[in-house]
Length: 298
Image 1 (tube, rainbow, N blue to C red):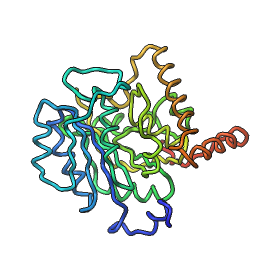
Image 2 (cartoon, one colour):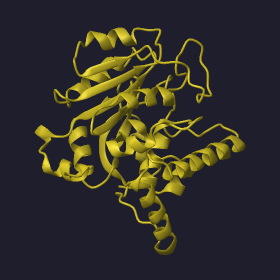
Image 3 (tube, one colour):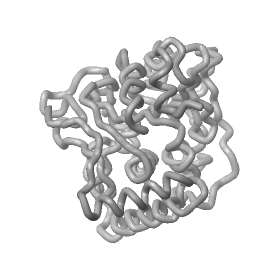
Image 4 (cartoon, helix red, strand yellow):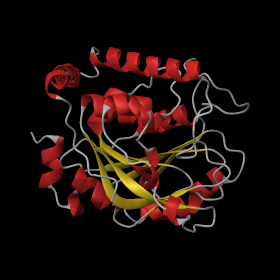
């Protein structure tokens, strides 16, 4: 049987592995139509878009249904309240973009998973670039153009997500400050099988997925700008914004994430990946950690 990497190498893009694009929505009527158009144009008939809507009160669900596309699977009734979720917004089911994404990821059937926000846009060639990178690694992160609410590029100093701060692989670095921007990520299913279910009190889905990939598998950042990341007044987590959490909250979050990763390494979910994690860290202690990445300064 072919491994996932060999399977990607062996198949031309016209007969590539099935893709699942996972999206979490909440009151996204303003931009959701454009985002879905840019995604659907790059998918094949057997691919899927999994959308988990957290009880939107605007026309988000209506707009999604109007596409009438068999590749779109909409989950908008949620599930029973989850005691792991620590934040609260009246009238919502998941009360958290993070766990709304988790719900979408749990429904995914594809061999390759893409994350997508409701308000961005995909640029042509994102699927092809991701699949090319995933021949060698388990998770890839592309660069992105920064656009405003009207779709216009930002000033030269902010036109790229990676321009101000080069992104790097590495557990310690990314535990300190997350480099994994969810809307720019694509990964193999093997990561999903270790990342789910999310641990309690998780602040960001992409932070957890990136750390799982960095810890147990392999990751890569590429220069290609394949997403148009939209900054507007209603972003859930503006990229590059400095956290306003108190120091003790930051330390507690990182402690809990580190502990969850350690526990996951000994679980049945990680399996051989947990063994690779232990060997990887033992080897890096003596020879230094090496990672697959591209210089994001250029």
